[in-house]
Amino acid sequence: MKISLDKLIRRETDKIDLNFCQKVDTINYCDTSYELASPISIDGKISTTKSGFYLDADVEFTVLDNCSRCLEEVEVPIEYSIQGFLVKEDFDEDSFEDDDAFIYDGQDIDLIQIIEQTLDFKLPARVLCDEDCKGLCPGCGANLNKEACSCNEIANDEEIIDPRFAKLKDIFKND
Ligand SMILES: [Zn+2]
Ligand SMILES: [Zn+2]
Image 1 (cartoon, rainbow, N blue to C red):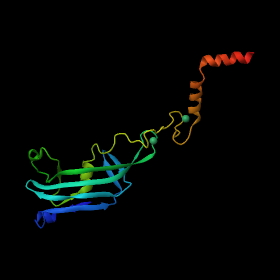
Image 2 (tube, rainbow, N blue to C red):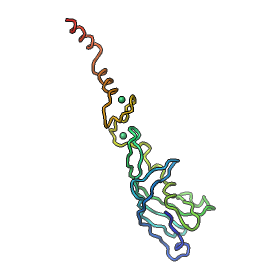
Image 3 (cartoon, protein in one colour):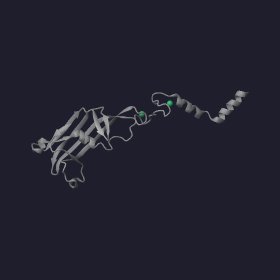
Image 4 (cartoon, protein in one colour):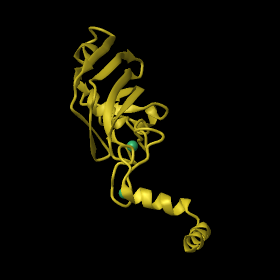
């Protein structure tokens, strides 16, 4: 998703509007490749300021992740804003202390790359398909949202029958 800054560099304009939706298959973050369940929608602009080119855009898309309890695929909507200066590799870090700065090659910026760099804390650390997800049975691995496995029933029975009552039962049986 490359955007040419040519018109800004040649001062033909002082602002490039970004307003589009693009289909992207995957996005990489922290050595993980996430499949996208929606196109990436971008709404914002790149403008010329006294300190350089400035990117200000809202991004929105949906990634596919797995529920951390039952491992089912979950759609995770992501929506946030990216703001920062576009700088060349040899930029003076001190002059951008209070702002984010994204390095570009002096010609175009790659918005996907910038999204990948800014995904910190945007992806939930723990994805759940549902707050009440019952997860997988530690005994047999069954998805407890979909089926009640037999290991679960045995565990429940043991809890319900108090051993003292179990003894009483035996006494009555003898009568
Ligand atoms: Zn789940
Ligand atoms: Zn089980």
